[in-house]
Image 1 (tube, rainbow, N blue to C red):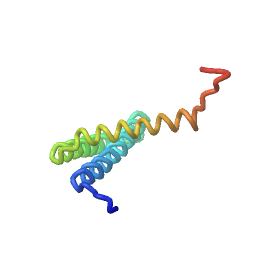
Image 2: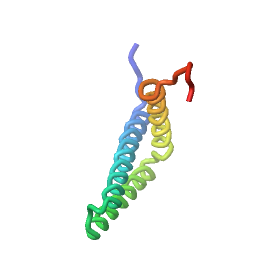
Image 3: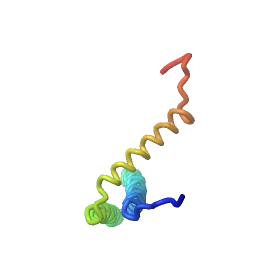
Image 4: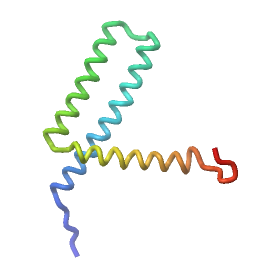
Length: 102
């Protein structure tokens, strides 16, 4: 029996995943930028360029989400990724000791 693939759903899912990953990478970059700014390692000019670059990335992500109708898809994927991370943290990184709950 052949597998039927809905091209529109596949496109939405794949684009949603890509945009969600770009959002996550952008958030990591923003956190690193804040560390460098608060650490005094950047000149005023570098801070300005960095801030403008981050704003440009965020605006582009939002524009793509709106143009492609991906707002809900990206939100759903981000929620699913958050659930996966929570599960990983709960089971691997921070295992719950039933004899000694926190």
